[in-house]
Length: 384
Ligand code: UD1
Ligand code: UDP
Image (cartoon, rainbow, N blue to C red; front, side, top):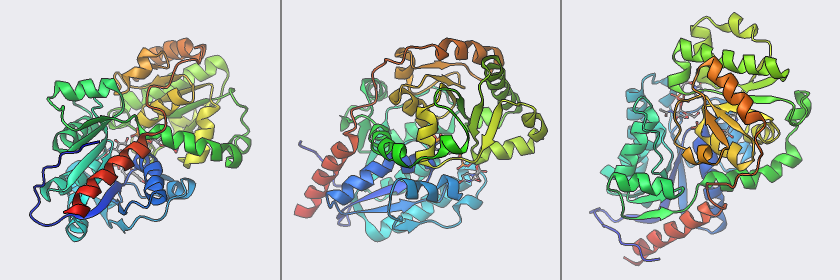
């Protein structure tokens, strides 16, 4: 592969790769790449922004995914309560580290504030940026993730796209240079770790569940859970469906969702939704086991929509749009928003789906491909 680089930095960049994690899905996404970098002895370091911090959202993932501790961890980020202050704290913190290390290549993945802050810090220092999961669009400007991903794509030097649809979205915004069709590292992660799950996860036994005899629910999107009508509508719809089918619903609840339920005074109301069993957010192995053995999943999560398609579990997405439109085209997923009637109708349609769709996110070699490119970039800086 021949890579052209605009060497903009006046300071010599160091022949190493920086990677940034900070939220639960980013730890999952980067885990296989960090393992590859270690196996292939590619010089690298990992920054954790501290955006997610509860053990069940953070350290549980380092443990389950067998990751070493990050080389740097920002302090105090979680004290910031607004998008602006959280992003600013991470921008400042990441910049300090990048000023010390000046890596020649910096990898960010996905669309959380962590990634925007990190990419911006690197851009200002003329460090080459690679964006994993480039070109995803929901075309929903209410979503903080939509602003973030657009901005990150436009300030990155290397765009790692999941599939042709992502490339089309990039092209529509004039982004055609250094676009690589790599697939998505979530395939690498979920396949690599599912084997471990089969050996280690005890969760079905602990919760007294039989495979294929329960439903799974996750919801945490700002547009859904920060609005009382949407939060109530989606939980009511899932309860109604579960009652109709006489199936329990396992609901590993995100901390944002629990906070909103509390603030809206919905704790007693939720207790009356007798089919829904709220549990702690689960580590990756338990969650994969819960997902892969579920009859159907209700979710507003990006990663869970993808993993459901990969493990051939039908999904009903509690949103009116998705960046993973391939899952809709393949019949693996249906959009139902937060309206109870639509959720009931979609649940009924999806529950009897034949689970024979192909996987639309790559073949599990994404991390290797990105590691190859990282090696090439390093080569340019080792020689100079
Ligand atoms: C963030 C991402 C979202 C991603 C999600 C993955 C942005 C704008 N949003 O949303 O794209 O889908 O992560 O889960 O970056 N909290 C805890 N403990 C934690 C994490 C969060 O208590 O470990 C609380 C925070 O204090 C805050 C709320 O949950 O009150 C929301 O956290 P935040 O990181 O701002 O956004 P997420 O909703 O997690
Ligand atoms: N996940 C998990 N435990 C849970 C819920 C989710 O391990 O209790 C994993 C899930 O398998 C996926 C990732 O977290 O890999 C998705 O994260 P999340 O839904 O928080 O964020 P999104 O993908 O929507 O950005």
